[in-house]
Image 1 (spheres, rainbow, N blue to C red):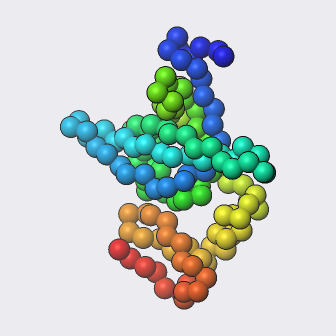
Image 2: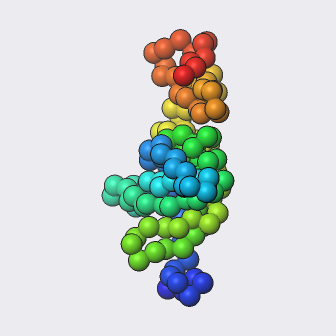
Image 3: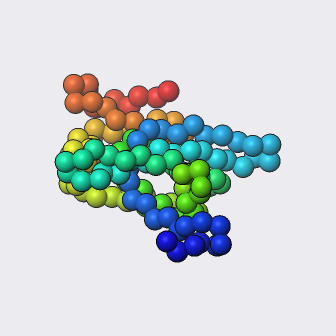
Amino acid sequence: MKLYQKTGCRALLVGRLKEMPNLLMDDRGKFSTKLIIATKKSENNGELSYRVFVQGESALRIRQFGFIGLYLWIEGDFENTGEIMAEKISFLNFPGSGKIDQDYKLMNDFSYREKFELFYIPDHQNSEFVVLH
């Protein structure tokens, strides 16, 4: 494997957000979080999960605009602990690529919470109202 910045291996990961992260802030006001990213090994084999450590504005952006099932492109450094230290994160859109995309296909099934959190309204509920928390 190619060494990255003489500390480890360069990691490029494409996967989906498995759970919503908890946002932490240190004494200096810097944000950080740990993401659990799921990738599919193959059609027959299950999925692999990776821990990704994110700092700064990327952590805040994922907490504000991310949702479970969101596809992410992550570039970073693979650490000895098995975590990926993210340097760049991009949101991806794969329309029609799987069950999650089909379930969330219609924008009428979404509403926005305060602070820009995306909230899914299941089919059995009335989707004409906005849920504010």
